[in-house]
Image (tube, one colour):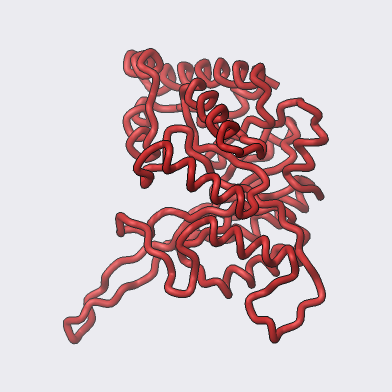
Length: 320
C-alpha cells in the first residue's frame, strides 16, 4: 500500500481519479451493499478512497424526575471497518477521516494505533461538523478544538511521541496527512485572508496534501490555488467535485456547503423539466469542469459520490 503523496508523485503529472464515500446509517445497510455500490468505479482504478466519519447526534429525553438527559443517537458504523474492507477487497488505499469533534486525545491515539496496525497509511484530519441538533462546533473537553491541533498530534505520533511518556511504544507510524480546504472560504472564517492564515497554520503543522470542498466554478479553484502559492502553501491541492443529480440539490447545496452556483448553471438546472434532465445538466457541467481542471494539471479529481456510482461514472468515462 502507499501514501496519497506517493500516488501523486508516481503519476508524474497525470491526473488521478479518486472518490469519497459515506458510511451508511447504523443498521440500515450491510457492508456488501456499500462495496457493491462502489465496485463499478473500480474499473477506473482509483488509487485511494476517502471514507468519512459522521458525528454522533443528540436528543434530549425527559426523565421521570423532570430533568432532561442528553442521549447520543445515530452514530454511523464502521469507518475503520469499511477502510479495512476496501483495502482487502479492492487493494486500494483507504483514507479514513479523523475528526476533532467527538473524540478525546486518548481516543484519537487509540484510533491511530488501530489504523497503523491494519496497515492504513493515510488519514484526513478535520475539525468536523457540529453535532446535531447544535448549530456550532463544540470540542470535547479532552479533545482538540482545531484541525491544526489534531494534525500536531498525528505528526507527534509519526515522530514516536505518544500522549503518555511513561508508556513505551516500539514503533513509529508514518501517516500521510490530508487536510480540508475551502476555495470559497470556510463558513466560520471572517474573510478569505483569515481563512488563508488558518490554512497555512494547518499546512505548517504537517499537512501533506489538501482536498477542497466541492465547487462548481473552476475560477474559484484557480484563484484559490494562486493565493495558496503566494502564501507559501505548496502541497498538492486536489479539487473536490460533486455531480449535481436533482433539481433540489441546486437549491440546498449552496446553503449546506456555503458555495455559489454559476448563474448559467443554476438557470439550466432550474429550466430542467424533471430530475432526469437536471442530472443530464449536472453531468455535462461536471464533465466540462473536469476537462478544464485536467488541462490545468490538477493532481487528482476527487468525487463526492454519496457511495453511489452512476453519475460519477457518467462523468469519469468522458474524462479518463
